[in-house]
Image (tube, rainbow, N blue to C red):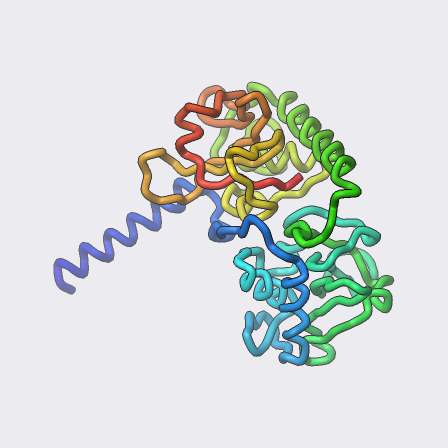
Length: 303
C-alpha cells in the first residue's frame, strides 16, 4: 500500500467515526422533501407499476417487496421514507380510515389485528396498489375488500392539489391546538437533564430527538427516533412561514460546510425555540438573530 492510499483510507475512517459520534442513530440519510407534492402524481406513479413482479425486499424498478414499492414511489417524488413495513408504520401522521386520501400508506394484517405484514399505497376511489407475494406481482385492489384486514394508515404528505378552502379555518384551529399541546408537553420537562443517546423509554433524561419524539407522541403524533429520520417526514416550510410546533433541524456549526443534521428544536412562537442540549437540559432559547438560526438546515411541519 502506498503512503497516499494509506492517508486516504485513514481519512475515510476518521470521517465515518466522526459521523457516528455526532449523529447518534443513523437510521436514514436526510432527504430533501419538495415544498409541494401533488398526491395525484404519487397515486399515478403507483398505478403505473401494476403488473411488475413481486420479489422479497426488491426495490425496483422491475420487481418490488411490499414496503419497497412505497419507498420507490415516494423516492420518485423526491421524498425519502423507510424501507420496511415496521418503519413506515411509524412514519408521518396517523390517518383514520374515513379520512384516507390518495398517497396515504395503508397497512394490513392477515389476521386483521396486531402488527401489519403487508401494505400498499391508497390511490383514491376505494383503490390501493400493493406488491402481493401471493399473486406474485404488483396489483390493484378495492380497499373495501380488505377492510377486515386493515390495521392503520399513515400520511407522509398533504394533498397540495385539493381545494381545502372550506376546511381551512377548522384545520388551522386544530393545528394550533395540537401545537399548543406539544409546547405544554415540553414545558413540563423544563430543566430535565440532557444525555446523548438517551433512551426513548425514559423521561429522566433526553437528547434533542428523544425529547421531540416524546412531546409529539404525547400529543398523538408519532415521530421517528433520531433527528435525521425526523427531518424526512412532514412538509418542508420556509423560515418566514414558521409556525408554533414546527421542527427546526440544524447542523453542528454555522461555519460547517456540511448540512448534516445534528440537532432538532421545536419552534415555540414569539421568536423562541424549545429544545434540550448541554448543561441547561430542556430549555427555551432565543432563535432569530442567534447562532441557532444560523445553523438551520431545514424546517418541517408535522402538525
